[in-house]
Length: 303
Ligand SMILES: [Cu+2]
Image 1: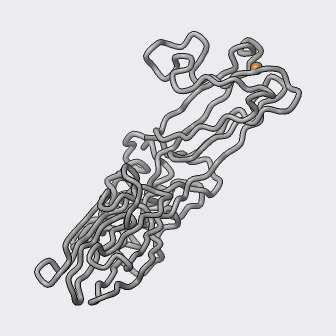
Image 2 (image 1 turned 180 degrees about the horizontal axis):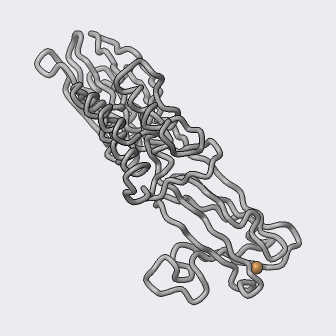
């Protein structure tokens, strides 16, 4: 079996495959006294290129007279002269969930906007009966968790770390948060931006086992087994090595699950090679950009 695979791989390797890049480029055309389109919806990591067609333009991010210190401030994120000599300008948008304005300072009635989509979610955990329900929650970086105190329930805390956790580590009590959960403070929400496995506990009731865990997973590209940001034959080789040569278990098994069936097996590198070298379908989401896997399975993506 594995000898055949190696032969197949050797054959396939002789085909020259250039790494593919997944971020999309969107184009705005600058005419003499207008640009088109005036609004765009893109994903984080995408680029927008402003292209000169005619006229003399002074492209600025923001809105005319926008508040200083905000993204509305003219030129806060980018500014560029666009004319016959400087016919194009490209900017990459990396921050999710924002609406970024742009306008032509030479003709400030010309305004446009770019919406960068947000694919994060908010999860809820109940605080009731000396327990966090559910006690284990798996999210992706950028997601929020909201702890909701049941009315009339006794006072609890939502405290990151473990009781007696080592100072200076993520287990130190309150290193990230230490909030009262009570009728006076019924909702505590926290945004998780760093992948990790985070324990937390209730100070008054930890001895009754009132503890919980938030697993914050890394965003990934499906099929990108070696986590280098592009899909190449190297990803198939890395999957096959794990499956058949006994190399270490990757931290992000989710990325290996090309066909998103919740299992990592030979079908995954086969699907990947099929996509790269034949007309087989592309991997399921998250693809082609990095993102969370919202389908339910047992595979995790840890950093
Ligand atoms: Cu408690």
